[in-house]
Length: 406
Image (cartoon, rainbow, N blue to C red):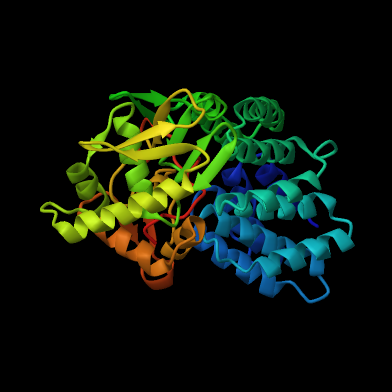
């Protein structure tokens, strides 16, 4: 490897893409194409970066397996940054195996972290955690140690383990400082802001207040019966009943919880659960059926009894009843929450992350675009959607479950 390629590679490792381009911008040999692609990725031109890396992979001879594998890993990182979550994982796995077989330990570890970060984005936490445990960051360079801690913090945040997340972010901050890469330091600081940003709203006794993630964690461990509108479950004292696939029952449970300790009229329940403005006997009969189903599902947590005015929810052992709601609610709230990270997403990636159909996501995006809440750029398969980050609330941390309407 010649001195210019070596110098450019060192500049990229230090987070200096302009310094790298100054050395290789006019070269079109395979190593220079690969480094130019990485430099363009660091500068944010992901389309040009992908094209350069593919050209480099074709330019390397079949005998240069390690170089070709490194190009695959770099392209996978670009796919992750551009939220192309349908990028062929098997190609990355094969590249990682090639790197390991040839003793390129660092790039093999980098490939593994890309796999873990993708799993985290699509909420496959068990797989991400299992894969992360197989990686020992002790002997890795500071940049990869920072990435390790970012992933560990992400998993902890999704599990509402705020103390573990803080410790991981503290370790990540130290590693990023040692790496001396400004973009990596900024990523750690951005992740840290999540801990001090309202993540949910608490509705109880007719009042409402915002909660930080740490408050949500404490609420889950409390003796309250929680109707969780972030994950569509009802939980109390370690027992959980999921209503993610029963949107009508969940809306009834939420309405009853918001009215606690009082009751709620049948007309209000009909309007909230069925959208019935003028209820007739068929609506009332359906309400009785759905209340019976809800009573059966919640029998270990609470009772639902009829009153003269309507229905009342009474916890069996819990001391109080509260509703945990998203910071911002409304139609297509989950789609907006993912887009609020400031990254550009494809509709297929959003569908994968939300666990729903691409057509459902596309309808939601079209609706949001009509009201100016999101914007698209590119066409066909290159089409991406984004919106400026919504200030003041956590984005994807409380959205691991699919929407109940899909």
